[in-house]
Length: 299
Image 1: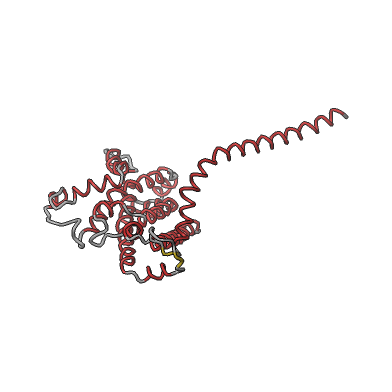
Image 2: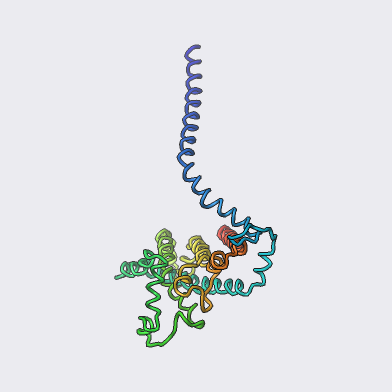
């Protein structure tokens, strides 16, 4: 009788001890995370809430905020400069990241093969990733100078950074060079994880290299491709540094982020700048949700 009672009590004590240890571990983990959470709340969540609040005020840094409701959004809907910045952002994002994605996918398909010199080519495309946007923009300002390397190599006399016809194309060319390596890494990682037995079955069925790429590689890469597209959209819309360093938004190169910067700190219209940030957040959230839905959709 006593042995049975002892056997009944001991498992109960062990369970309570395990729960107590689990609670102490969870509490310890939470306490260690508190400093990081506090910093995140102070420097990320609180400013975001402030931006949403200021979007409904007229605030110029030198006077008290005045509530104006939706007037900031109404003004932006008819502001030609904001509309032009939106169009330029779309042009830059599609021109840069659409091209970078296609180029990275083609390069990944070639470099995933065991070819002589493939490692050196990978290194050449990865090097721009180690360079900051500001440093890369300064280097390209020299390259794109009227007497710079690009004109010398092509035998041209083009004002790349001081012409409305060429400035936005110059930014796209520079950004393709900078960003292709980032997506190349993702595609190479995705291709390295693809099951090889599927390729063997396709070869046995007589599928050539092009057929295997379209019927095997692309469908299997669909998840990583959609991730790359989401990241490309986010990076394209958040462009700022090359436009600021190379042209300061002149000659039709002002993108939305640069428009927000100038509106907030040069024109001192914090309310309008916050309204633009809110519009960007809602637009990016909608795009991300659509892309995530596409990722989860079953064919």
